[in-house]
Image (cartoon, rainbow, N blue to C red):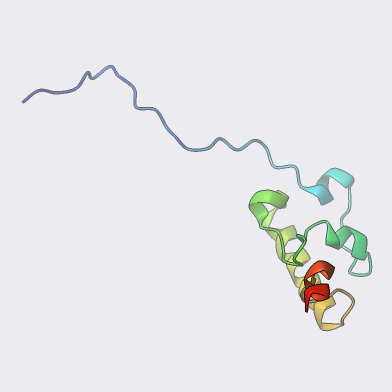
Length: 92
């Protein structure tokens, strides 16, 4: 049997992730206020969905808080459940 070169290193293809830059830690915000809708909307995409932690770079604790706030704001009808594109609405 032939063996491979024992000195050869196997490359790791895992994506290297830099240090997390949590928005609330960076800005020094300790309490996430549910009445500050402009800040909460930063963590929603165009369709009104909650952006994942991978893209928002929030800590797990703050991401859970933001997700809970968004869900409560939807129930109170302060933000829409779905954002309908006006061009689609005109086609109907």
